[in-house]
Every structure is written in structure tokens, then in C-alpha cells.
Image (cartoon, rainbow, N blue to C red; front, side, top):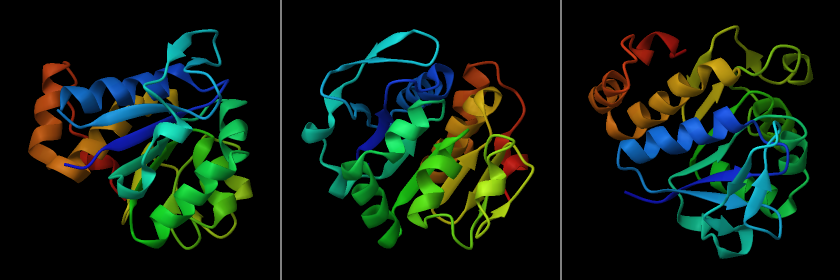
Length: 191
């Protein structure tokens, strides 16, 4: 299985980032956190410092399975201002690579790059008005081909389980979710 990367910027939404990291690693997926700053320590939106596994300069994004953007403000804005990340996301999308974003990130990070054009997606309520070339759905998690989007902090677990289902199958996602006492299947969130 290829390595996946989750990007951290000052002001990221902690529950969205750390839930995804925790759940994907429980499933045995190779996921590394990447600071887009010059420092491994990145401060979340609620003042929680997190040590990233890698700096952007250390990450080999060309061979990634998933590129993942947590939301939060101003974290999503900082991600969208990172040219190295923008180039990586566009290149990954152009080759059909898997991309996931939650909360503000679908609208603030992915949409300006054209990644959501013609796609079904979701995001944090209020940001969808920015995404006129996408079909924005009022659902917690939306899968459209190689793109998974989710609408906010409360859906972080289901978002992570949906990523696992996409890579490893629904059975593994249900097994991981059940072990965490998350009994409902995330299948009902697929678009």
C-alpha cells in the first residue's frame, strides 16, 4: 500500500486531522502528517500543538495514495496559499490520484484548483456558495470517483472510515469502526 499524506497548517481543525490520522493508522494504512510550515510543530485552531511527521520538503508526494486536507480556519486558507501543495494536488488530481478534504478545505483548498469542477461534493455550511462549478450536496460525506469530501468536525470519524473503505474495502472499515464502538456503517453517506 502506498503512503498517504495529511497536511497541517497553522489553524487546522484538530479533530478533523487527528481523527483521520488515528483511524487510518488503526487500519494499518501508511499515513504521514506533513507540516506546510518550516517547523514540525503546528498549532491547531484551538491551541493544540501537534508535531508533524515530516516537513513539506521531506514528503515524496508524487507516489502518494491519498492527499488529505483537514479544514479549520485559518488552516484551510494557509493550505490554499501553499504553492507546493497546490502543485501536488493538481498533479495528483490530473492522474486520478485520491484526494480527501473536510470542512472548509473542499471549498477553500480544492475548489480554486478546479479539482471539484463537475464533481459532487460537500463542505462546511456557508462555503458551498463559493463552489459554483461543483454540485454541492447536503450530506455529511460525499464520494465522487477519486474525491472524498466531508462537511465538518462531527463527520471526521465517518470521513476517515470512508477513506479506509475506499482503499481497503467496506469490511475493513466496518471492522475498524466497530472496534471503536461506531456501529452504523458509513455506507449510507456515499453519493
